[in-house]
Length: 285
Ligand code: GLN
Image (spheres, rainbow, N blue to C red):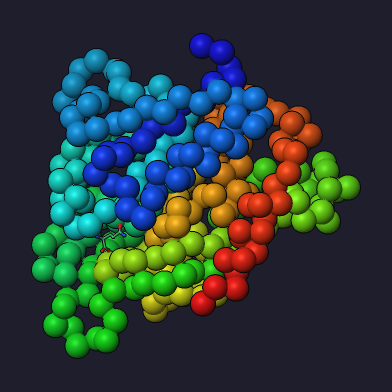
């Protein structure tokens, strides 16, 4: 296989694809192709890969470089939960070896300990992120039993590629048409679940909310990460308006395969549209 091919695993594309989360796959694919990297999308459906009790060491995920799981209603989450749990061994191995894995909303919740629905049903998660999620009960009396709206947050997740490019390409730093110096993340949230990160755990907050609710509307955090596994509530879809995040995921995927591009290979002719979309979203309330 040529070294310049990246394989993106897309979990349950037909079940977890709320608010156009598939746009994240398109952003990863397009920005990789702009750097001359071919991309293959590997759809992982229910029962389509090794389960924990399979003997042979094979599964689509093991041959992939990046993974993505989108959001969904409680019903879709319940539909995939058992199958997702059965794939835990492969997912854990991928995460521990640094595979970039983006999980949005419902997918994010399923990577924690559990998600308790507003009806009180507990859906077990993979317990790879030290988080737990509880939906507010409908009769909680709280005026807001769904957390909905535009989100602007300061990124806490380290952007190693951006640090490298800011160093190597200082002459481009000031130009607005390049996105590698964005420090915020923008998106749209709509969830009933309130997610809390276990204190003093290996799991850290993905971002700090400036506008919106984030994980729970209380502690000011948005999302969570462990190594290159990122859980976030940001739909939108997230990545097209956050190109700096796309490039970080691509960089980490290539690095995991010992493939390194020169600094100027990361520059693309014009990032103005993405930079403007990000800029515009910063002012949304
Ligand atoms: N069903 C989950 C919740 O309501 C996730 C929703 C989503 O993926 N947008 O919190």
